[in-house]
Length: 458
Image (cartoon, rainbow, N blue to C red; front, side, top):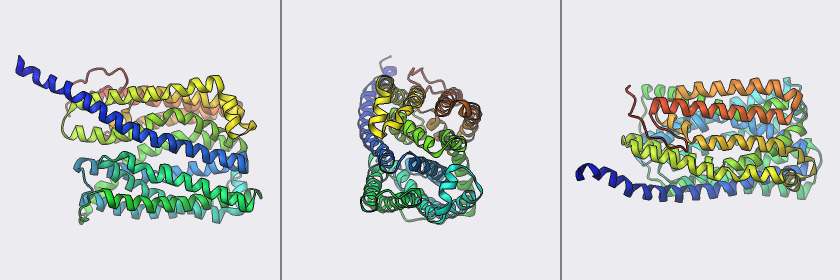
């Protein structure tokens, strides 16, 4: 009996250590996320205060499209790099070859996205497109260059996260980049003033491209200093085909996640003036403060799950999943309460009086983030358990719900309709992820912490 109790005693000793390490790393990552999210909100505040709601609306619309264009490399290929580096604990020769191949894909994606952007602006008749037509070439060129830097930086960030340095991985993009963007915008406004969107928007996107380039360069130096790297290996055609297939599945799932997050803003831009898109951007950014803990903890989840699953340590996977969900919800709850009592005043104080109407959609979206936090890291668990295709299908269902509700609710209800569609889609998606993660992996990723089921038979 005493011998049978040893594993349980060992786990009781390990759990406090795991909890302390998780809390320490999550606080580091969350601290950076708090500052970074504050800086990101500061960028929107700066654009709103210096250049107006219309400029913020166009910027937000373009940033949403930029995020979608980055998905194949920044989310798909980078997730594959993270998985490869996490298993080895170093940047192996195979992982380096994978990254070099991804860099070639990043260049192709930047060229394709730029070309398609120019065509779309020329053909579209929305207010955002009309505002961009006179300045399409310089703005799209700057956005395409930013896209190239962002994609390569995402792979570098994945490599650093894979060697268990999640906080350091974020510094260039989360801190350096928004600070440089804010500085560039302020200098442009200081020297040239406000001269209308035809002049202001190229200046904003030039500051964005320069900030992305400098953050990319700093990130590369950081990776060279802190990671152990092996010489790049030769890659066979079979490996390339396997990588492309895996990355396509990962990118498909991540792309639907991104589209699910942006579709409300994109469809709002099709039905409403650019200024309304700016108001909704403000609501989204304030509401996203509720998710900073979830996002920070999710950055730890992928590496942890991959490592424990490789060791067949199911007990550690279960305990980690529960701890992450509870910490995520704890960090998410305060914001909806603040918005409930002080929303209009807060939005007016930060962005200007015309943004007070953003409070209601911000509250609705923040409530959806709280539900996501309570469900935990089900999506990361499915991805790290090689259920990419299942995650893709579940995300497609949520996207269909989001698009349908947006088309129904945005025309009559505007900002509030878009926010309601966002919340319902988030709740549906996370509920589905939890259910199927429980079914296929045996783990409960929610804050409930139900005991893990036996590993399902293949």
